[in-house]
Image 1 (cartoon, rainbow, N blue to C red):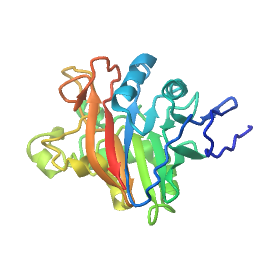
Image 2: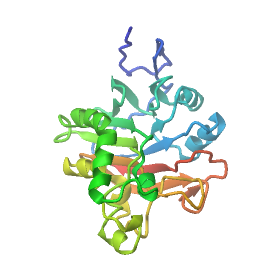
Image 3: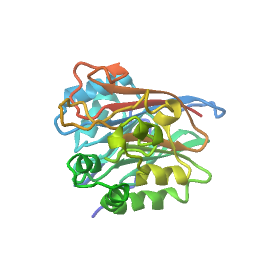
Image 4: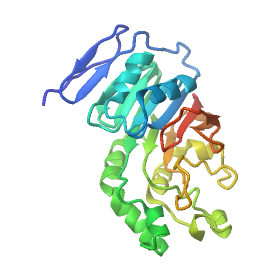
Length: 295
């Protein structure tokens, strides 16, 4: 396979493609001169395969994020980036794509570096994990009945993909700025907690979901839950925008961070009253999350 190696320090449009990979540089990449501090916004957006290009474009236009982690992209990301002037990395067969107003450097399929300025470089990860075995549905349907079974099944379902993320994170976690966005298709232990269980929520179960627990243990923080610590008052449901009597609503899309970053505000984007930013043209079955960071 022919690989394209490319450093994004150009202010003209350049495209580098083969059968899989596409890079493109935005026309006028942003650069914050002040190294002492600044702000930028991050959107994680599971487009879903049913969302039209026009709807996806309008979501990003309305929220105007600096950086986008797109899931279920499958080639749509390049069309969005070209239309809106974002730098882009992705490839047609992949779920994940990266859009940025800042210059980017490709590291691997799920990991780029974003250059806010010379002294502020973000290690940015975009992930989308296994959906075929979704534990809340298995609990609902009586297939899993104990906390041990739930935690074990969740760990086995996503172990291989999650281990790849941990391998990439470990050399960075001590000293560098990190943002991890995406859909892990697994709830959070910060939501399935003692208080929620005592109120009969989440099937009355307290579960240490392995991905959220592991990321917390290595030092990453959940941006939405950091800004909105009360999971009862602010459940933050990203799944699902579909309403049915048998559906399980939960928070399965996330923005995690570490290093000298601070989330200042969060917004859920969707079509209904559970969203902070309501868009009547919103087609996805996942609500998107927008976080404004300072550094």
